[in-house]
Image (cartoon, rainbow, N blue to C red):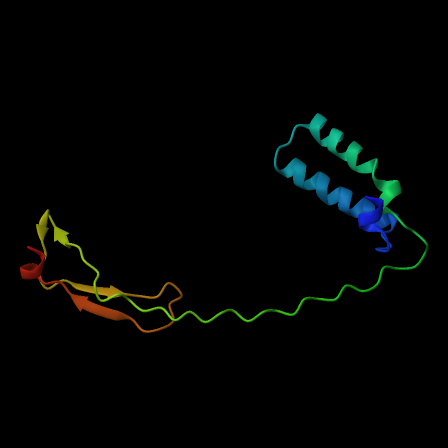
Length: 118
């Protein structure tokens, strides 16, 4: 623990805040009170190895730059097969539309052809 946190300048206040968040997370997930106490006791035992309080505030944390989402180039395969039925019978000339989940992009449609399904 000491080596992993060396130079991070973690203060007692920061350690206390992290322990409080952990406690709240455990309690909100209905962990037994005696188990919450045991976990917090184990965490507290690491304080001496983690806290480097020297009065100086920790360096500002650099915010990660948002990464652009990859553009998806999705196409609908031309060989989708199946049978559209109504009341158990094949349905002729039923319009089927393929709509992108995002609601953006081109809607592609086709109609069923019973003669090719049989």
